[in-house]
Amino acid sequence: QVQLVESGGGVVQPGRSLRLSCAASGFSFSNYAMHWVRQAPGKGLEWVAIISYNGDNTNYADSVKGRLTISRDNSKNTLFLHMNSLRAEDTAVYYCVKDRPAYTYGDDDAFDVWGQGTKVTVAA
Amino acid sequence: SYVVTQPPSVSVAPGETARITCGGNNIGSKSVHWYQQKPGQAPVLLIYDDSDRPSGIPERFSGSNSGNTATLTISRVEAGDEADYYCHVWNNGRDIHVIFGGGTKLTVL
Image (tube, rainbow over all chains, first blue to last red; front, side, top):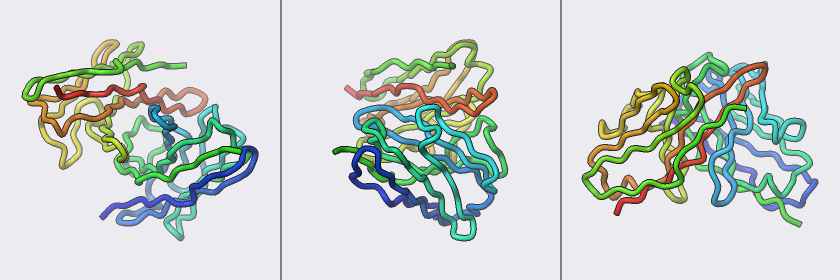
């Protein structure tokens, strides 16, 4: 079945780095734009970043621009989030999310598959 | 920047109809998507493109969008519908911006 499994979360000190991974299965990963969405403890959903199906295009929320980088390896069906200069406000559960239609980028699409999330805690 | 507003909470008795709104300037011109999130779980897509249901979502869940308000309607509410509900739109200009509403906690009395 269609599945997204995140990994790489943990506790990290402010200013340090972390890399999240998301393993995709059950669908043609290379055909879909992918996203990271995060949720701080007790808070709502916050979109973080998007990457096009072929990796050529990316966009970020203003709150993470310049510190977080989304990338993908279509040969390994894996999505990544490289997190640098981490801050306390980056503490959240990070979800890997699939765009609903294939071969679109930023086209008002819904997010039809979500991973179970990986928790990142930034604390001294 | 574009802002969408949801009521923090909605309460309804079992069997009644719940309506959760998502307000935004001329939101009727945008495609609105809705998600359900139960405690400790990932969000699930309920409604996409204002009013379409993914396969497996009960017909009790429906959506509409006009003017400055999009609405998620849950008919014949069940105890299992108690959850947080989020609306989602895109506001693309020079850059891509994905926007979620603040979420609405549905309580089944």
